[in-house]
Image (cartoon, rainbow, N blue to C red; front, side, top):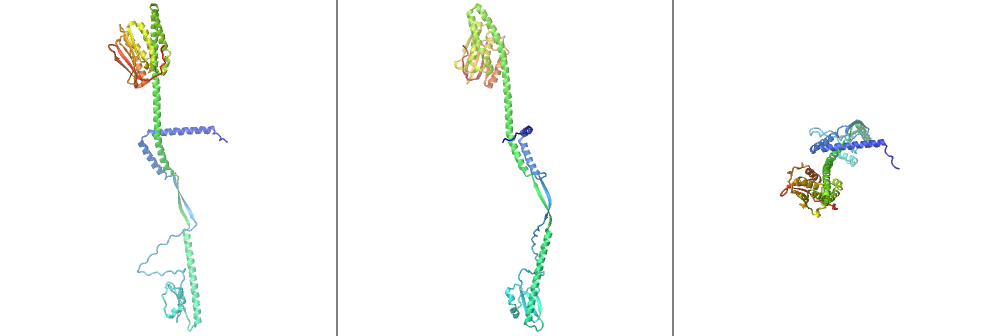
Length: 464
């Protein structure tokens, strides 16, 4: 059976709780990253010390005092060592021990029968008591126990003596029995007194400790915080770098769009003017020189065929091959040669192996237009325009040289916006790997050279 799905209310609460936990984690991790390692170490030590102090205080640790009633007797304390009396004092008489057999010595004399306990006597000594008495050797007596004397009547015979002895023996046995019973009774009374003295209530303290985990928890929290501080800092730095890269890419894309729009606007301004002048020249040549008019018309068609379909591709990709650029430049120069007649000479020095090299669109056309407009047209005798491409130090160098008046010397000198736009586009496309240089040409004029990284593309042949 499948488990029942969570209700929408519980799921919504769980989602809210999860979001709150994630938000709290990010806040805590951001705070950890914002503090220095020295402050982190100080706060960690303070946390561990606080955990050690709090684990012994309420509510993590408390004590319960209670009184407990003990019904079973407690063993009395061990008796102290007996005090040794001084040497000059009289020794106290020892208390007789009744748990061991006691031997007596019986002596009969003219005064009667005397029964005294004998110290260290063997059991056989009692049997030979009569012989000892006859020999007159009374032996060593034990003064710790009292003796018994039985007086004999005058002229008593043997039967009377035996009866007296039996009477004495019975008296001794009764005395010993009574003494044992008295000792046992005294021992029981003493034991009962000790039991009663030790029975009663006692105070007991129970310690409940719930804070033993605080120290381990504080150490674990410190270690986890250190790991979060290291890893989260790297994540934040990566996110910042990604955001900066995205922002930079967006800014570069916006700049590129602006530059492309400027170039498109310039192209929209230049092409209609060029077209109107070319069409006017064709119309004039139709009447005066139909052959030259036909040649100019063919070059215009080739120019439009090479430039118009590829404008959208150039704006989209940012680069195209050098062959397509030349496909636009060649008919353009042929049209100008018809207009300027003998005043314009052109030289194109581009090896076939470099026709597939990448080159930004409309840059070569802008350089050629500037060279003719501001260098060769204002000069009465005209001059020569040279377009050259070569590999220098592993990079593609495309130069446009003219023998005109020189940079900035013509009355029609521009504002330099075109060159500024070219530099900005090169910076967006290649960064510091591309450059634009302007030098003086000999014997006159100037040379503008564009250097870009050499990259080859499949050249498809753009010109007919």
